[in-house]
Length: 318
Length: 185
Image (cartoon, rainbow over all chains, first blue to last red; front, side, top):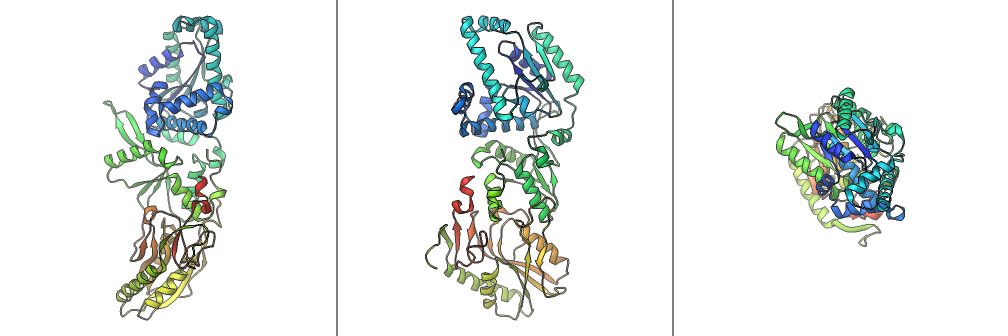
């Protein structure tokens, strides 16, 4: 599905443009409010989200392994949503997550600091000094998030397809420019296979066509035992709107034709796969003839342990 | 060997229960192959204690052979494929073959062997497994004779190993996550 990532300097009206853009194009807006709603599906909650935000706001030792886990879980959640729906994603490192993904438009909103502070002063009713501190802290937090997760510099202009100077454009003008870019770049027309093949997650060369070490290892395992398999051969629509557009879909990782079995391999801990379990339940209900099983993280590790390979594998899965 | 060695957190199947169940299996197999001469094929190495005790409980004439496969751990490179490291000594065409496994887990090994042996055109080919860990099955295996169903835990003993150890335990035990490394995941 198509994705528009939005990276805003505070005070550039980027959120308003993003919300109107999502409405105009029929995309889902992934902002903080939406993430709070979705958090439950990956066993996060607003409290953990707050902890995550606070840690990245202050930086340093607060970004511990727990916080990192939350951050990566959010990335998984957003990536999963992008398989099901057209999205407009506000920040959250999305320009890193979808860095080279086809079917994606990366937009950045900028404006001189003086303009931005003036905008925010009016809106938030804060003094100029406080607003200045607020904007600097927010900029640092967003940049830190991207650097931590993807080692990318948020100010690098090559991360963006479109950079809009909002002190020179109205919201409507910005909207028109982005819509034109969406149409000209044809991001809604990119076939899913192209996206999967070119998604280029970190370490793509290492994994080949597979998304992570676990999938790669599992494929080797099947090949070793001469079990024919297909990788992500079919997407099952789970929900469509009145126009027949897919709102939610599910693509199991492997299909074993001889067993007529789909396998979804998840590297999330079993306690964190609520969302995936829910989708598999939905799939089973809608497609009762489909035989599918989830191979949880522990299943995979147990399989590796059986061959005494646990210490040698999936060390850098994340 | 009544004391549990380090790493065994629980005895899942006691030796007495094993003996009793194997006697029952021996009777079932004797009845199933009455008036025939089955070839009992053990899959090395996990089957060794089991097949050794099992054949003594089978009351009809039989022949024994063994087969062994390369482990996945030995050839873990892209495109690496399983191969037989010790093939059968017997020709099985037209024979009644009973494949004996220590455990059927994902079913990958048994599935490969069944395909391989089927191609040699035996008269019949059936599977007997000491343990059946059904929860983790990927390849469907028709099991004709089953010792015990076991839960999705890491089991060792009575032929089953972890890094080649624990095979000599006279019972089936659950190995700790500290030993397997699962606790660090």
